[in-house]
Length: 169
Image (cartoon, rainbow, N blue to C red; front, side, top):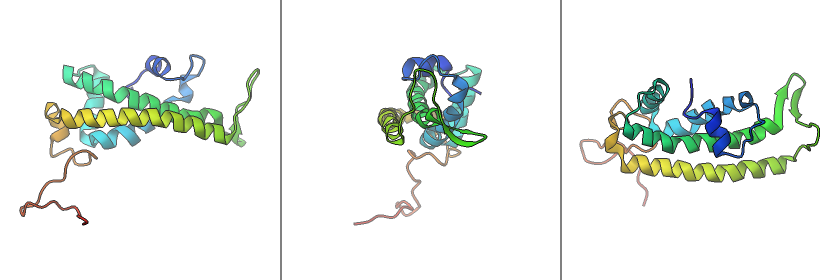
């Protein structure tokens, strides 16, 4: 299954270079989709959009939505790859990469790289959230009662007119 981005998209839209083996990055793509995009969309809508994306049956509005999802997935995957490519779990434990004409970086530099990419990813997550809030009427699967776990959907009100959330003064 393709999680909204291709290898070409990832390498053209992030600093991940052409010589990076995409199989070293693909585990991060799925997990970042599930950790970052799914909570925004909600599980029901996420599965619907992902299925349509993979079967190439998106309508025009869904294609636009996917164009907001893709940079989130790409930049979050790049953020995760900074650590995953710098430190890899091998049969002898956690190892740093060290090859010809290259030097391993310190953990502080790895953290700096992750933070740098996380800032970009956060920007794109906010754009996705704002787009979905402003255009929720275009996506009946998003507003469906079956889509219960989106971070963006407002709580249903009880018969009294109050929500079931806690209010502090």
